[in-house]
Image (cartoon, rainbow over all chains, first blue to last red; front, side, top):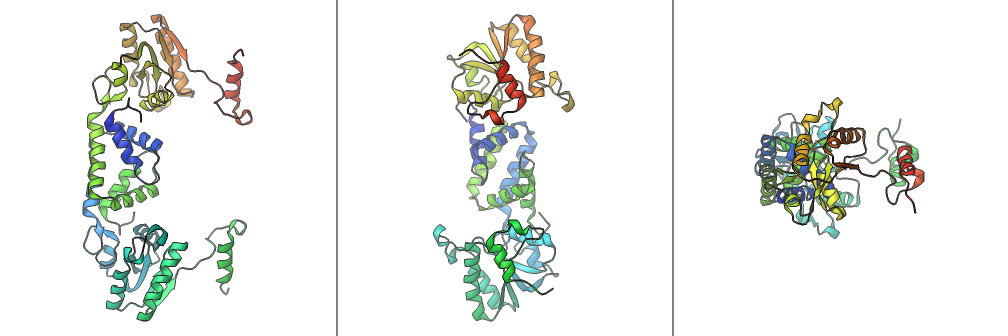
Length: 200
Length: 200
């Protein structure tokens, strides 16, 4: 925004633009929109920002975000504590919970190993996972990181650490997405789908 | 977000989702991102929201957003007070200022006439424009609303009110955008470009 614009508006637009996926044009539009909100709504928004940051932290057990000491999933009687699903980020927990088909617990790494981005194994919550497994009677650990170079690397690295502990380590299946069109599937996915074919 | 998510995060995501152009998935992503910001950055963001809403209001003269009583453009010695460019919203002022070619002043309507959306002429700042013109020695009013049904209707309506006051009313030129390809121009634009052709 040029200097004819009110400074608080310029500052607000810059704040919006600092969020991921929001460019300067969208940020300006959002700043103008805030002007059209009621003063109470704007204050509620500001409170929601501060309150989320202050009251939400990582579950002591699984590292997922929660406002309690132990998250509702870890403290639920209904969840099978013998199966741990290892994911990159809290959003992945949300994705699995949406399926309503997974009844074990989670472990959130908060990142993936990526030497090029200076993400070393110590920077993600691997040692907390090892601790959980050495303490409890874990039957299976499902490596549910994304099927990318970083996701695969992280899954392989962790599997290497866990196998000596005598725990079963599995990986999510790769294959065609449901509803996909063969014609548009990429070669690697198609190869994985062929390789992992099942009896009918 | 499902009930396994921390409530403050759910509330924050809903606040983001209430902004225009931000869906629930993006809102969740933004809420998670806020968790990764420093506490100070989050508080600065919250302050920027409240401060913009509290300190920015409409210029008494042109209705553009400003933190002063009279905006920098209206109070500048360098601007030609005899030409008023009438626009729909503050973002349009920003667009004109970017050209660095307009040296008159503005009048921001804060909306367009649109009976279907219950936007009647009284709901936008038309009477403040009439007042400015009846008080000052305005030579020209440029109707710079968008070339849409609502923009054209509003421009026609205001022109009808201003002409009896003896002021020159003009409208932005319609034609091909610079760098456009004839092949892809829509019929109405091409017709306007033909109709408004200039001598070379």
